[in-house]
Length: 243
Image 1 (cartoon, rainbow, N blue to C red):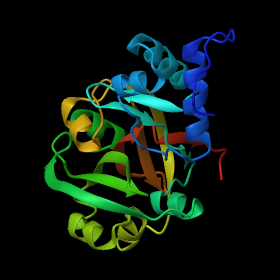
Image 2 (tube, rainbow, N blue to C red):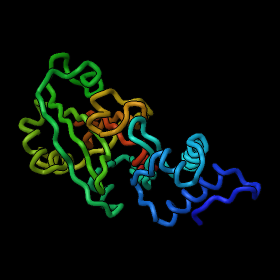
Image 3 (tube, one colour):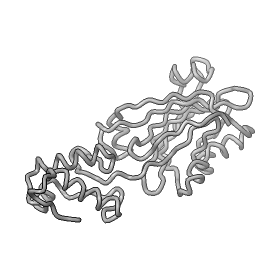
Image 4 (cartoon, rainbow, N blue to C red):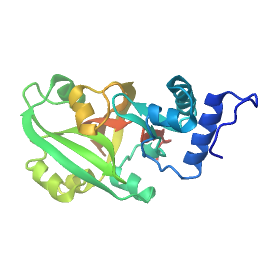
């Protein structure tokens, strides 16, 4: 299967779509690989670019490819099922999927808690928090860009410990927080701002999954306020029943 057949009653764009889909499904074109340009495909199949664009649009509807403005068309990667439950843990999620993952630290600052963070965590108006920004990677992909806030008075020196452990769970354990649970989760789809798009290496017109979360210790006292932006093309959020 590799050539279009004229005069057999099947639209050329549909035949081209089937040929490209066959290449993708049989692994001749790998996940994440860029397809030839519309002009190159038009020359390959001896058709005009409009016909090629119709074929590509059909592949997008089948979720086999994605088109990035200014970059081209790429084979869609298999999505990663990221579980969100009362005890959501990034490392455990990756381990369950048998995926190697790591965290890249971007910055950490000590600042007065923003009003929405202070209110959500029950902090005073002028109390300080540590704000830590990270990128999570798995299988060569950026999984998420995260901003996390921790009460500075309760967790002195937390950024250095977090950098050493690369784990929220192990970091909080060093402060005597042996367990924590998800108190609140809010998920929405949003267009990324310019900085988020740059860090996640994606177009600004491609939505991210925006997750606002609050984690609390076993007494119900908030220990972490988080804003996580997941790659919508690479990550599928799975909401789990209570543990």
